[in-house]
Structures are given as structure tokens and as C-alpha cells.
Image (cartoon, rainbow, N blue to C red; front, side):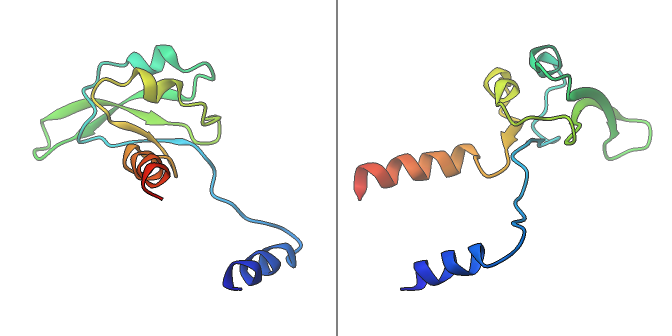
Length: 104
């Protein structure tokens, strides 16, 4: 079957490359409350400023230090604006997986 062929192809390689499971930020949704900075147990989130529309207009947001982030999801649980997500585990993806469990 196609699935077994894909698995065999994966295991035939010397090294597997996978995307890291880390948090990412949607700066358009970020309220700049910095709650996630204090929640993160690994100090992988820090305050940042971005320029929006005009050079004189700035917005406080956060940025993820991906090399430090462990992908634990604590920041995501504390983000009231929904700006933080986990790569590969967005709210939409989890919703679709739960829905598939009940349908199929």
C-alpha cells in the first residue's frame, strides 16, 4: 500500500529531518500583554516592537526564541488573544482531529 511504501522510504534514510515543535506568534493578533513572557518556564519569549503602517507607529508584541522553546504549550494556554500557536498543532488542526474521531 501507499502508506507502507512511505514508511519504508522514511526508515531507509540514515537521518530523519523533522520540523521542531515550537510556538509561533501572529503579531496581528498579539495584544502585547506580555503574559506569555512570565508564563514560559524556559524564558524563550521576549518583548519586541514592530512598526505598523507608519514609521512613527510602533506596537509591542512578543517574539519566540525558537532555539530555546521546548514546545510545551504553556504560553499558548495563557494567551487570551489567541496569537500564540504551536507549529503542527494549531487550534484548527486539533479541532479537525477531534472532529475526525467523532465522525470516522
